[in-house]
Amino acid sequence: MSKVVFIIDIDITIANNDHRAVHLRSSCGSCGRTIPVEERGPCTSCGSHEVSIPQESWDNFLDPDLILQDQVVPGAKRTIDLFRKFGFEFHFITGRNGTK
Image (cartoon, one colour):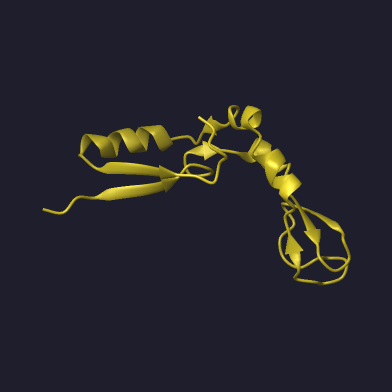
């Protein structure tokens, strides 16, 4: 008999991290412009696709005190509880820095 296993990423799937997303700032590798996270795609100043998020930005986003303020995505707990009733197994994954 096969078993159904769900592998779920924590952030955005069951934990709302919008309040931390403001800390994610991209930088253009060509002109150095800081690009807000909500502005996706090539740099609007020079058109370069060499855009990256610096480590300092990730460190701010993954601050343990801010992670503790994450809220459960509406309906996520109820959905997981329902599937658990049917015997499904869950494993959670994350890019978080070992926070509890």
